Image 1: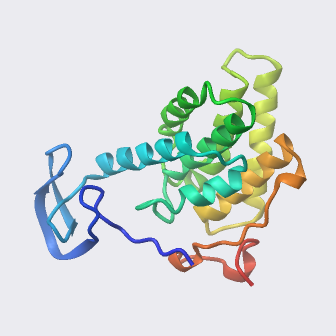
Image 2: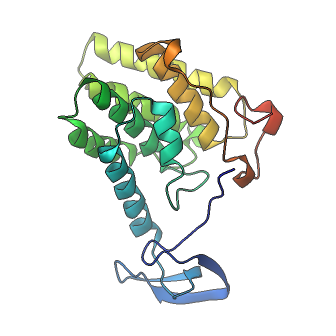
Length: 228
């Protein structure tokens, strides 16, 4: 089982919870924040800078990856240091895996540009859209992939329709499993649905969750990816 450990993105030491909140400057942007967490070397990285570092690590990993299966690549990305159990970083992970796998199959010339665009678009999807908007960010992330690959815009014709239909089907597939939300499970569902459409069922590997021990609201045996 993969254990998520929060470590300092500056020095690599473990981040710990302090006895009481302190005023401390972000090691990167130098802006002062009040926090109850810091690393053992007294480094603190604010949420904004930390998210930027995580996104950079995802893009870098994708640019160096030769993986052609999005599900396998997604599992690798979600095990990168400091990727949380849940959260909006997953809204980038899932389109990034599809874009990278697609590029590794058909040509990588546009991959970096695609990843930059996926980051830009996914940054507009806040956390908890699954509960607050009724549309999971993992499903919307797959929609980002389809729209980038097919160069879909607001005034596109059939591609506008097809991307909307595919994205809505994937959001439906996620919703059918029921809550509580799990960014790992919902991402696996979204990618599986996308792979069936793009490559066919033969390209779907067996996925066994390696993250359940980090999820306090895990559905366990009611989840299709829980190890039995």
